[in-house]
Amino acid sequence: MNLLFSQGSNAQNDFRSYIYDQPIELLKGFTLRYKAANVLLKNRDVKELLRYDDRALAGFTTGQTLDVMGGIVGFGGGFMVGWAVGGYLAVPKSNRYGQRTSSSAQMDWTVLGIGGGLIAASAILSALGRYAKIDAIETYNSKFKSARVNTQAPQVIFAEEGIGIGIRF
Image (cartoon, rainbow, N blue to C red; front, side, top):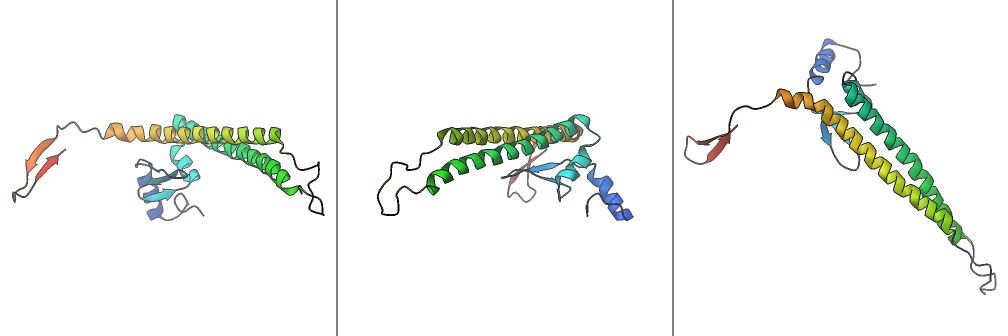
């Protein structure tokens, strides 16, 4: 059940309208996480928030597509590297008397190289997807930043108790 955007009581509808008026905060780590109004959002929640901003929604969808493509390509590359290394390690290097034979295992360097190239390509695709999603969130948040422009100059103030100095924006 989607807690954030489910149909329900007036309290949920009030919260829903409140969250549409909030910028999306990016929590960067191994994966991107999203937060709005102190609520962690899932990808489908973010897409729901972005649906009225066509440019941001297109960028976020592109980022998701690149992420999925990177995962698929990376899986194939990892399989190929594992196949080459596993094939090398699985073939016995000696016969049953402990003597080395002339048919000892050979590393399949072609498969290993192609797999390594696919892994590198998946890292690039995933990075492009991450940047596309960050750009989409920044595009969405730009409407909030322009509304919050502070036109006052900073002022240096002294505390009334005489204990410190502060800056008021």
